[in-house]
Amino acid sequence: MKRENKDARMAEIEAAAYALLAKFGYENISMLKIAKAAKASNETLYNWYGDKKGLFAAMIRRNASATLSALDDSMLHQDVPEVVLKRASKTLLTMLMSTNAIALNKAAAGDATGELGQVLNEEGRRKVAPKFLPLIEHLNTARPAADTLEIYLSVLIGDWQIKRVIGVMTAPESTEIDARIERAIRVVQNLS
Image 1 (cartoon, one colour):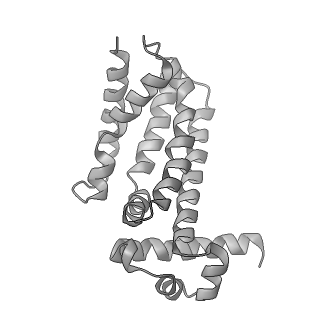
Image 2 (spheres, helix red, strand yellow; image 1 turned 120 degrees about the vertical axis):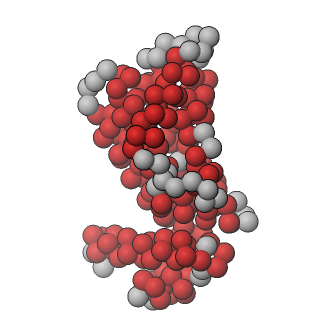
Image 3 (cartoon, helix red, strand yellow; image 1 turned 45 degrees about the horizontal axis):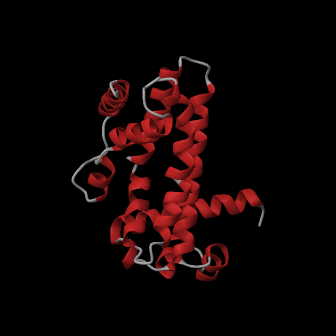
């Protein structure tokens, strides 16, 4: 199978997995159920992903890769660092609050081994946070940039992600995201 055909087929399989995850939860779906929903053979899924954890780890990696790419795009434009920070923050927060990202967080929470959580951490925060460091350095706070970044991300994300995961919050509107970004920037600028 050609690479582009395989990529397209994998995207279809992963879309079926997202749909089943939303409907039944991580623990209540199997590779066979996903294969049937995607109109693929169970053998294909096992050959490509290894097992259910492998499939969801691949989904996490694909989601993280798309986020990193979008972040890179948002940081390309030469602009005032604070404007770039706002644009990158909007990209990040929009992705983190997306239906797919929340579904993957639920899957990681439902994985008793913690393996998906490790993949989520490695592919997510550990790769994304460093991209913000040069932007945070331009805020010129009295604290070390790494500390400021930690505070910034904590204020930016806050409890929104967990509220989305447990179903007590819908995806925020663009204006809510903008207000959250402004608040996070104000908080770190007021650090002494």
